[in-house]
Image (cartoon, rainbow, N blue to C red):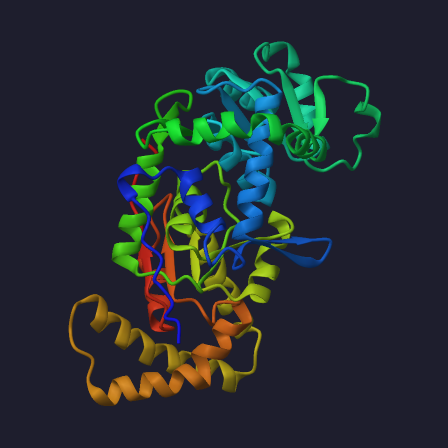
Length: 394
């Protein structure tokens, strides 16, 4: 009987993000889900192998368009698989990805792209393309804009400044043969301390500053997070915060690649909370407004319910808050209180969390601003160990 041989761990000292993606894509877990995205009401799955192959095609396509090592590729889009393909493909070609908030005004997008000397841009749809066309004269270095969603783009077809993402992939397929050796050289030559990503600072003192982040920055962050939180490869992360923000890069890109869990992206930002329940994530990283919104939603619905349900909710939350207060203070929870809290999990807390889509949530985080103690207490009472993260893009 043949024994299976355990696969060696990555050489973290020499690892870059594209090498880590290739290690996952070409390994025995290459068929596992890496990305999911809801498109026209249906969840589409991308395996680690498909993720790596798409990144290779993007890399070859960008190289065929003339991308040189160190040059910048901007992305102005929601959380879509093409952002991940473009980011990792750019890095595979030794370029630098620049994340730009899709909610930015044209002048803000122009500032972000010009401040980073961006030469290619992935724009998600007509809305983002129109912003770029409006400030085209301010972007003399941008050689090509690549749009992902072709809807509404028919009248732009004759503009040589624009091309579709499918055209980029097709160019990559046609060019991969002659460029494969050069791509392999670039992958091999890349060093962990090379800049691979630019995110912008908060801009509290003046204009936001592009912050240069290396492969090592991101991978070390992902590994450190994993050492503390012990994520599982079978976990599901719900990614709906902008990938231009370092917090979402930390979870969806860095930790996702380090651990190998699946990242799920909603169809639209507006539908995210509805689709959250469909996924039932194990991991979630959200700003305070999301957690505050959940709290308000529960309290409003309870106030609209019957007097008996309101009484049961208040009594059950009183027990949960007693448990939460003891745990947050580092005090032991008596056995009787623990058993009562566990019973209430099935009777009250679990149905509430199920309505919110949080019933499977194991790891919950907030960052970007301080979260009020009442909201922390609310989720800890329900049995969710919500944690506050602190950090800076810099």
